[in-house]
Amino acid sequence: MGKTQTVGHPQFGFKCEVPDPPPRARRRIFTIRHPETPMEREGRENRERVRHWYQLHLGGKQRECADALGLSVMAVNRHVKALRAEWST
Image (cartoon, rainbow, N blue to C red; front, side, top):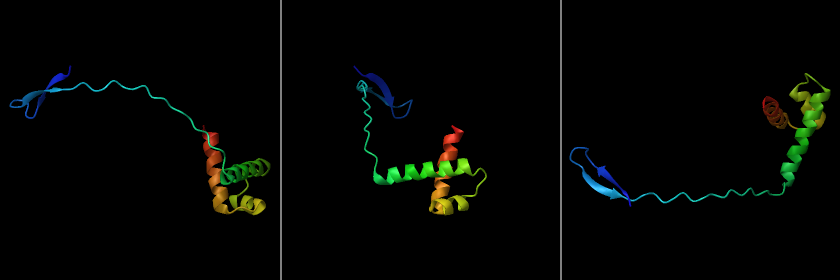
């Protein structure tokens, strides 16, 4: 059965029966792995290229990395941010 609850003003309210909430259903969580798209693969490969370039050229600038790898400075910047996030964890 439900609970009795006062509704409205605490002094002049009326009482009504509120139904119990339904029992929580057990949730199933499925992880769906999708195949890697060509863009994701290219991004992963470019990130590895940027990582390797910085391992060989410590202290190098993003412009130098972009010129050496044939990438845009913005793309190198995104990869560097992702690499820094990996290193901070």
